[in-house]
Amino acid sequence: MATETAPAHTGLDRSIIDRFSAAVAGHADVITDNHVLTDRGHDFWGVGGVAELLLHPHSRAEVAAIMRIAAEYRIPVVPRGGASNCSGGMMPASGRVLLDLSNLNQIIDIDVDGRCARVEPGVVNSDLQDRLAPHGLCFSPDPVSAHLATVGGNLIENAGGPHALKYGVTYNHILAAEVVLPDGATVTLRVDDDGPDLLGVIIGSEGTLGIVTEVTVALRPIAEVTHSLMGAFATAREAADTIAAIIATGVVPAAVEWLDRDGIAGLQQFYDTGYPTDADSIVLIDVDGSAVEVSHDQPIVERVLRERATEVRIAETEKDRAALWYGRLHAPDSVVQSGKGFFIGDVTVPRDRIPEMQAAIQATAARHSDGLLFIAVCGHAGDGDLHPTTFYDKSNPSAASALEAANNEIIAAALRLGGTITGEHGVGTEKIPFMTQRFTPVEISAQRSIKSAFDPDGLLNPGVMLPEQSADEPPTTEFGDTVRAAVYGDWRPDPDAPLTVGENTDITVNLGNLSLVVGADATLDQIRSHLDEQGVTCIAVPDSGGARRIGDLVATATGTERIEVRHALLGAEVTVIDGQVPARFGAETMKDVAGYDTKRLYIGAHGTFGALSRLIFKIGVKR
Image 1: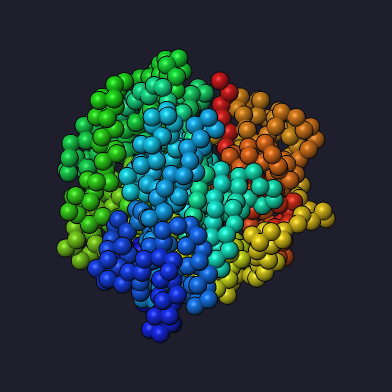
Image 2 (image 1 turned 30 degrees about the horizontal axis):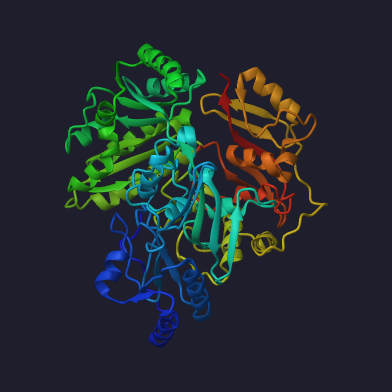
């Protein structure tokens, strides 16, 4: 769990801070008031610390100037957005500077015809949605914290939300980002850049690689019609099987949310959820689209629900939909208002493993009932992202140790089930101890080399994400040098680098999770034939290409192929060029923000980071 206060940084004396403060005074408001520093230095959950001073820049150019000066004085900089983070990802301290980006809140341009917008990073998600609504458009990421979270924060955390199942996470909706690097240099990274997907690495990097100063986001039309349905189930397995049965029809709901028995009962103590208290699990489903699409899809979803659920509710008006969703969407508020101690977790498993994950969580709650009140499970069932929320009595002396043990057990269970340690909250400082459980030493080393390539002096958001270096980590200097060459425009493809390794041609379709695991040496013809037999599709597999290998396609992807690979790729088993050591980045989980999204570097990289051995993609059901 995250500590309440960041450790003091003692490497800087007062004179250095004073000279730095004078140097940046022309580029930002410099604030030293302790009350302001305390207030702005803590996130929504109260985690954080007190910086030496706070800087309020008023333009993107000022951010670059500040970072150049910070690099000169070797001052650690902690960026701040909406501070809605749930993992201790913002840790100012003595000797560090808090860079508050909230003044960079301009919506620069809305291109209605092109369905994109250029915004500054401090624009609050809900404010952008309000500006887009009159145009019939929206920005797809819709975290529950949208009224606090900024677009820049959405990007650096790769935010999701209830509707990520159908529309994707933030990564799927970023077209370009202007990024100020720790040395003050500015680069613009685009979705259609050739070479390694650096934009993909910046997304979800938790403010440790660069400071985003402008974002171009993709927009989509607001659905003409949205109807909601609720199914109550006697067991978690029946609920999960019903979700799989719905998706197997070819209907992709806009949202599928989950709440378990203990969650309903627990939240009912604080407010009336309106949900049946005798259900083991409930599932909330949104079906959206045109009137014609909804009139086709809704009866299919309703039929599957009525075949399996103990109770079905349907909400078609905005009033009824708000009432049906109220209990789920207001859960975070009720947690805060309960007066109880609480901890909101975040793990993701493949969709078909949700019942086992729920059972593991409730077994954990039972084992630690002496220190905990209950654990409520809610989350995004459509993509396997669950938020076990642990409640405890603050006066119970057993609570702290029980909470720590329970959190450890829940994360261990997620990893056993093929999941990951965080689906959308991020690693921050809270989940650093679990990074070495999720990643091997070479995988950690490669990520450390990414950090060093962008930020060689370690001055940007220090202490976040990566664990202390271990003697077990092999050197990945060549990997890091290749990243740095890509960042600064010196990267060149190596015509002699192998694109694939292992001669793996296995093809496996997981219909319950809608994922495809395929050997990198499988041909496009072989994959298409297998997908056709299973009645599924994958946008990363083009309709032509014959004997071309899927690994070759990913390693050399450009243009439309690159875009489609980016949207579909979930994971990659690779080699790391330093010693050609095997590694795995990503998994069959639909959401995964554990560490740097290193697999993105292998897209279009022509083998310069290493070869591909196995790939994991999202798939869809043919309609």
